[in-house]
Length: 112
Image (cartoon, rainbow, N blue to C red; front, side, top):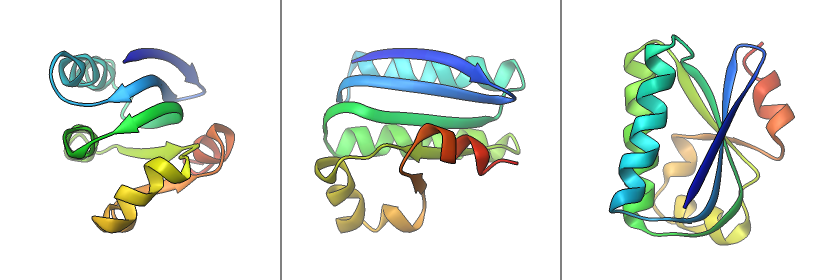
């Protein structure tokens, strides 16, 4: 898994590429979210366009990140979910917890 970040206005956009699973990857995402919170960039969009696979541990990583951001008075939106990624979210009913958007631009705009 690779993670790139950039700011769009006051929103931190986190682009994930590859597989979203446990292990070292969970530490990468946690570190990026923690750094964002420390910098007071608590509104985040996770661009998942290039996520090829996500298991239950990946879902847990997203829940953990969302919880950290919300406890810091921020929030997290998801963007560009493929059907392959959207399906596990629907099965686990996490589609009711996360707001997801068809594009990063729409997700960023939702914070306005």
